Length: 297
Image (cartoon, rainbow, N blue to C red; front, side, top):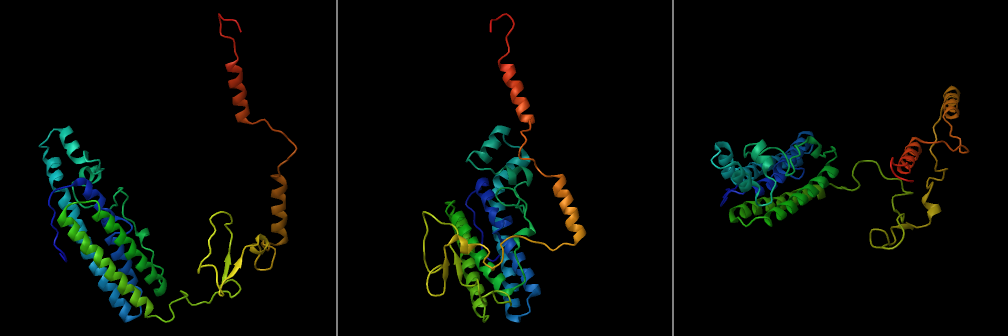
């Protein structure tokens, strides 16, 4: 492996939490698949090589975190498979620390399944590649940042020195990858705005203050010479200068059919219909007020 895994003692509960970086949305498999598929369609030779390199390393990281999961499960795996303890003792030894490790123990025999820590199966929906290098690189930077934060949280969950050391290595590599992706992004000029088409200049530098009241704040994101700050409610509607309503062009026959349907399904605001809920309530009221035989009402 790229880094040696040393686990001082089994810990099924911790193993279950580690699955977040094995089969979770911020995990190593998701990262490897994200970068590999980006590399396949990348036309720039430098970025293609970068993406293939990091995708391959992420598979190595998948191996590391998978081995941590399996090593942490080793003791309970044997006890479950061989039934060397009483049923209650086995259950307490696996779940007694307040963890929910039955997932890896009972369903997967102490292995490293492609699920997250809640047991949700890995899915390709975790891959958010869109095929535009500047957008994908920004997404990759964010993915590396999220993974680093998760590794920090996992490090804080264990006192096992070997596990901490391996997780620290994986966390550090997220920093290196983030730097590489940032360098690749900034080497594209221009790299903002993503895509090819320019924005509509009427709206590019407008900030609509649409959530008004206590807690409002101003900063570089909505004030200064480059921003037009719009707080008037009337100026926030129909900003294109039209009606602000939704319209569709239809043929005369389509319009007539639609008019017939609207006429057939029109509501009469003058009626007061009796509903099923009211009928039930009336029955309950009568039942509550009924005279019980042998008593006086």
